Each structure stands twice: as structure tokens, then as C-alpha cells.
Length: 132
Length: 278
Image (cartoon, rainbow over all chains, first blue to last red; front, side, top):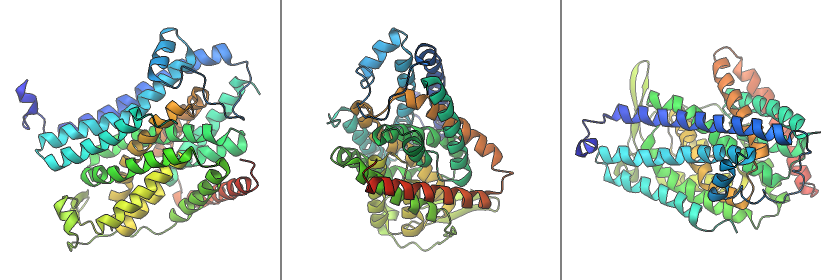
């Protein structure tokens, strides 16, 4: 396993290509999930009336990761769309994590530190009970 | 109007928004909020959540193309992301206490500013003199490839740029937009970076900044799957189509038309905010 931390194993160009590929995979996965979920949602609810004039917040289960997973298991269209949205949000966050790895390979510890601060801020907003 | 009709019309609107956004460089998210609130009468809080997701989609989609070319200054982007992500979290927190009509007025002002900025001639800052101690310590100076070989550049006024970025982050978190215009302002005018580098680096930062506040908005119930469905698919398809068209289109004329349209939308947002309709 040690060789994966060796710079020779990952040339700088490879890691940049990996990041480019990861972004594409993230966006494509998200779109496919949104599309599939959308078909199910429209098939079941397409004839109903949209209600976005008054803000009530989304219904329970769509605002937390555990709720979304539960809905996806039950093949609910809305939760599958929401899982795609979560994939989309995760895409740039994973990119930051990969960049930390890239800086580590370059032995650029200052930037490993800076990248970890950015990740820390995002993690704080995720788990910091900021929803109010 | 049924959900099916609503979704299909919105899909078409988002497609157009994504295409115009990518052709003019203003991003797809910026038109989504007026489209949803003024045309579809969606509550501005749902519109903000949806626009955030749209800007993550376009930023990540186009960034995958830029990474390969080596123009993006990843160090500079990462350093400034400390400012934009903390700003985004502050913006998302402030949004709870901010009346929605004030949000609409601020949004209108930022929109007008973005339209004006898209017209400003881009100064291609190339300077070799190394004036910032901090830029040297943080190794922010870089180079980018051109047909004539690599061109080096230096970064100026790092602290000023950092605070401008924090402001851009707050706006992004508060309004749900990428605030690309504010980011480019910080990098072009304050830090004096060549515009090719600032545009791609700003795009690199938009996704990360938006993700920082999107996780808060998701838990707050602002992000609705029924709206994300047409908007995400429409904006992505539009941005992709726009980048294919970019080679042939008369961009300067298009930019003029688009800027007039968004200025008009912005005035309407401000008016509706002022009269308390939004």
C-alpha cells in the first residue's frame, strides 16, 4: 500500500485527470438519478397541482440523509431525485478532498493544511445544526 | 397547471437559462431565481435552494473541461475558498433572519451589478513585478499556457482580495447564486490576475462555495426535488449545448440582449421586493 503515497506512482497530471474524471462522474451520476427519480415522480404525481407559492419547507424525509435513503429504498421518486441532488452537492466536496491528497503527494504541507480548513468549514456547516 | 406541464415548461426555461448563462459567462443560476419567482410565482426561499443546486451543476460540469488545460490556479482557488466557504456559511445563517423582500432587493442589485460587469472590457493583467510578500509565502504566483508558451503572473493585494471573496461568499450563501461576477471582480481588479485565470479559478470556486451553504439549505427544507428535477436537467443540457454553440455564435450581441433582459428582471425583483410582493 505504501507505493500509493509515492509521487512517482501518481504523476501530477494523473491526479488532475482523476479530478476531472471525478467531476464528470459526479455530474453524470447525479443527472441519471434525477432523471430516473423524475420519471417515477411524474408518473405518480404528474397530474397533481404544484404548490410552491407558499413556503412550507419540503415534507419530512427529504431534508435529511437518512430520510432520503429510506425513501429511495421504497422507490419514491422524490427521494431518488433528492439523492441525485445530494450527489451533486457531494461532487465539489469530494474534489476538495482529492485536492488535499494531491497536495500531500507534492509534499506541499501548507496547502494540505489550507485544504483541510476548507473541508473543515464544509463539515461544520453539515453537522453544526445550523438549519435553525 | 398540472405538475407535468409545470415541469416541462420549467425544463424549457432552465435549458434557455443554462445556454445563455454559458454563452455569456454569467452562469445559469443567476436567471433561475427571477424565472422561478417572477414567472412561476415560486416562493423566493425555494428559488434560492434550487438556484444553489443549479450553480453547483454548471460549475462542476464546466470545471471538468477546464482542469485539463492547466489554466485554473488551484492554490489560489483553495486559499480563497477559506474566505468564500466561511462567507457562505455566514450568509446561510443570516438568511434565516432576513425578510424575503430585502433578499429580493439585494438580489436585484447584485444582478444589475453582474450585468454591468459582463460588459467591462477584460484587462489582461500581465505583470512580472512581485509586490506581495504574502503571495510569495503562499506560493500564489503562477503561469498559464498560451499558444506562445507559458505566461507568468503575480498576485497582488492578497488581503484585499481575501475580504472581497468573503463578501462574495456571504452573497452566495444569502442569495443562492455563484456570485461569479463578485469573484472575478476580486481577482481581476484587486489581485490583478489575468482574466483567463480568474474566470476558470472563479468557476472552480463556485461549486465548493455553493456546496457549503447547500448542505445548510437542504436541512432547512429549501431544496425541493420537484423544482430541482427540471432545473438541474435543463440547466446542464443548456450549458452543454451553449458550450458547443459558443464557437459559432455572435457572443457580443447576445451578451447585450441578455444583459438588458436580466437588468429588466432585476428592476422587477427590486420593485416587487420594495412593494412587499416577494
